[in-house]
Each structure stands twice: as C-alpha cells, then as structure tokens.
Amino acid sequence: MPSNDLIAVIDFETTGMTPAQGARATEIAIVLLENGQIVDRFQSLMRTGVYIPSFITQLTGITNAMVAEAPDAGFVMREAARFVGNVPMVAHNASFDSKFWSAELQHAGVAAPHPFACTVLLSRRMYPEARSHSLGNIVDHLGLPRAGRAHRALADAEMAAFLLARIQHDLRERWGIAQPGHELLSGLQRCARPAVGKWLVRQVQENQPCFSKPPALGG
DNA sequence: TGCCAGGCCCTCTTTAGGGCCTT
Image (cartoon, rainbow, N blue to C red; front, side):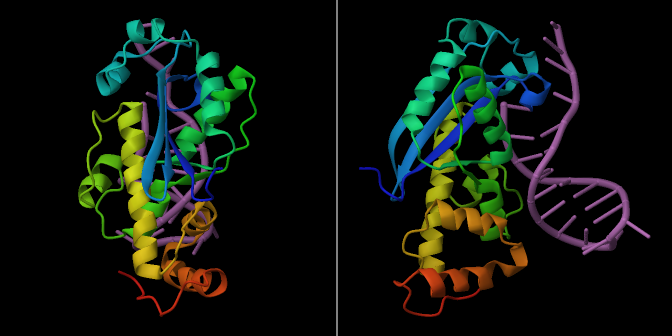
C-alpha cells in the first residue's frame, strides 16, 4: 500500500528547452522517495527521431547513436507512467520537466494529471543564504552527495531527491512538521518568501498536532 | 545541421528590467 509520504522525483534530458519548439526527451529518470529514502528507480534513454544538437551531447554525453538504439519514446513513457502511478511528482525547476512530462505522455497517448512541486522554488525559500540554487551548487552548498555524472537523468533525479529529503528533514527539525508531504511542499513553494516563517507557523498550528513548541523563525 | 522559452524572483519595482533555472 503506497505511503502518503511517497513522492516521485523526475528528471529529463532533452534536445532543447521547450516542447513548444519541437524539443523532445532523450532520457528520463524517476526515483521514488519515501521517508527520506530512495526506495525505487526508473531510468531509460528514449528514441524520438529528433536530432540531438552537438552542444547538448557535450552537456549530457547523450549521442544520436545512443538514442537510435534506445526503446521507442512511447513505450518508455507508458512504462514511466505505470511506474509513477498516481504518486505526486517533484522536479528541480518543475516548470521545465512538467512540460516534457505532459508533452511526452501526450505523444504516448497517456493522460498526465500529476501535480508537480519544484525543488528550485523550495530551495529559494528554505536556503535564501545560498548563492546559487542550481542543482549542483545547492547540493554542494548543503553538503549532499553527488550521485554520479551531472546532466544524466538518473544522477540528477537522485541529487534532486537528496535535496528534497534534506528539505523535508529541515522542515521537521526547524518547524516541527512531522510529515512534510507533497501538499505542504506545494503550499510552501507558492508562499511569498518574506512570509514563509509565518506561513509555516500557521501550518504547524492548524494542521500538525505533533507540534509541541514554538519554532525558531528564520534559520 | 540545428532551432532557443518562460515562470519565478529581486529591486535602483509595481505603468519594468534583468537574472536565475532547466536542456
């Protein structure tokens, strides 16, 4: 039985910045995070027939030859959708990955009703002292492990999952929130940064019966 | 071979401009 704490962290490698201009996915990775631990992984290159520009290959290491031998994108996306089920999703800069998730599932003829939360927005609220909130820089800033080659989908998805687990940990430690699930994360990322402290106090007071002492503002 | 966006946030703001973040 799926836990309420289960969250799917996704990362795409693609041929460009947006599906609106014809960019397609070249690789997908999804990790399932439960109680701060990665409990399952899905990863695959995918073949769409769209050319990969050389600067993308330089960035990701993914070549046109590699995707030519990969499974068809429709097959991969249907498998990915089965893997995710109805679990809510998180990505680092979710506005990017959510567009490719919807577009690739549409190509595959699958509905994509999943809500997304964004670790960039959460990181900006939780760690305003960080100079940069790019995935590599925020992972280094927080002393989290590097999962593998940056700009490959599984490594980036795992690093985003480590970041999310750290955010959930800090929400527990700083604010006394026992189980910071997807709904609270979505609320937090929408909360204006100057009001984060007050918003979290209100969430704790109204929705978190485990809360036993006033949290320290800021930090 | 290669196309190059858009939502969010900050501030010298809000009738705007520019940087960040993703490939």
